[in-house]
Length: 223
Image (cartoon, rainbow, N blue to C red):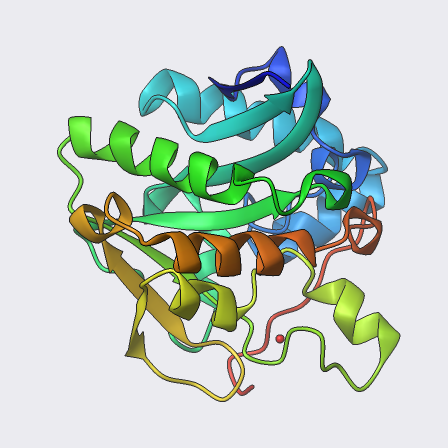
């Protein structure tokens, strides 16, 4: 079995799961996101975001392939490129950190170490670029939603449990949307048991939850 990780580009963008390819949860602010969905093709906005971020900042994602099949991906960028981050009650992301927007391993490939490979690939990339840390908004209630619609709304967020399992520390607590941080030197020195926990948690994030065109509304009083 062969594995490789490549940078996200306009070409490899098409290898994201369909729901993720058309999701602009992080890339647009809530109002702009609603407008993009009303226009009927949020995928164009996704492509525009990737193009702009690549041109102005550089690599903003990684895709893992197993035997040539897309098996997982991560997206990341500085806070200024992630408008939705400002809508969370625990914002803003620290100015010295890059935001890990989302991470996903296709269920069929979970448990094979791809989560570790992807996140460490991001850590190596950002370390070379002089970045000190990664921060993310976690979902403290992932997998425990009262309503199915609520689960679909926030499927772009990784579980807070996932971040804690791989060495992130909570820098701003919240009952639903804690903000967590990992120093990059920590990301490059995980133990094998933590890596297994990462895979198990990322593998639970089903691509079926990512519906094209869904624009969740994040309220500052409360995913």
